[in-house]
Image (cartoon, rainbow, N blue to C red):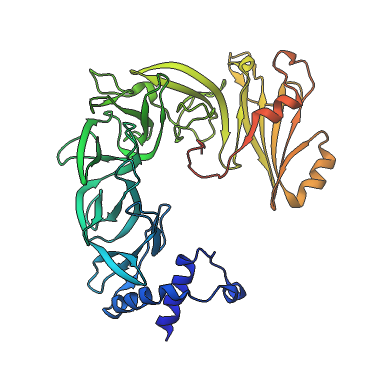
Length: 454
C-alpha cells in the first residue's frame, strides 16, 4: 500500500506539472488522471523486480520521471529512471498509443550513480537523443552514453569517458554537438572532441588539444568571439593553482581550433590569472570575455587572501588580447560587482574592512610614504566611495552614527548601501547616479557564469 501511494505521488508531481508542496499543500493536488493508470501498472511491474526510482545527482533534468518529446511528433514520451536490484541502472521510454502506454526503448547502464541527464537535438526538426553520464567507481573521469530511441529499442550510439562536457550547436547546423573534454591514457595534456549526429549515428566531427596548463575543468560556457565565430570557453585550474581559458571554435570543414594557445608552445599564458573566476559575457553583447586580473595599486603578493584584484574583462583571439570591455571589482561573499570608471586607472585602489555585523569595501587613493611604499589606509580625505553590507538588526543604530549612507538593496538579513565622500579627490569623484549604474548585484554568491571572485 505504501509503495502504491508513493507511485501515485510521483506521478502526480511529474506527470501533471504540479509543484511539489509540503504538508497540507499535497491535499490540493488533483486526482491521478485516468490516462496514467496503465503507466502506473507498468511501473508496478518494474518495482516488483526490486528496482527503485533514481534521479540524477546534478543538472537541470533531475526528476525520476520526465516528459520529453523525443520523436518531435508533438506528443511527450515518458522517460523514467530506475536502479535495479543488482546495482545497474535502467532508463525506460514509454509512449502512449490510443489508450495504452508501451515501452519503446530501454537503456541500461553501469556506474556508481547517474550524474546528469541531457537531451540532444539530433536534427533540424527537433528529434531528441538521450544523453546520460555516470560516475565511475575507480576513475577520475566519468562515463558518457548517448542513446537514440526508434523501432522499439534504445540504440547506444556513443560511449566515452570524459572530464567535462557541454552541449551546443557548435557548427550552427541546427542540431546539437557534444563537446567532451578528456585525457587519454598516458597523455599529459587534456584534449577536447566534438561529436554530432549524421542521421541516427553519433560521429566524431573533430578534436584538438587544450593548453598545456589545463588540468581540471571548472566551467564551460558558449558564445561568440570578437570576429563572430561560435566558440566554447573552457576555464580550467592549473597544477600551480592558477586558472586559464581555452577558446575552442570549429572551422567550416569541421576542424577544431584553439584560439587561446601559442601554436608553438601550446601555452594559454595570455589567459592565465590567479583568481578563480569564470569567463562570461559581462556586457551582454554576445561576445564572451575572459576575466584577466591585475592587483590593485598597493598590493604585491598574488597569493595573499587579502590581495584585491581588478578584473580586466578581455576578448582574446589567436593567442592575443584584442579588446578590453570593462574593468570591475567583484565581492562574491556579498554578491555584487562594481564597474570601475576608466578615470580611476591605476590611481585608485580597494580595501575591505569589517567589524561585527558590518562589512565595508572602500575605493580610495593611497598615498606614498617616505619609503616609497603605498599606505593602504582609507580615510575621509582619500576615499571615494564605500560599499556597505550591514546586518539588518544593527542597521538603524549604525546609520545614526554614520550619516550619508544610501540604501540600494535590502534582504531579510542584510542592508546594502554606499556612501560617497566629498573631499579634494575631485579628479576621481563619482556621482550618485554613476554609483547606482556601476554597482550591480548578482544572482548568487557561488561560482557561476556571472564571474564571481572569492
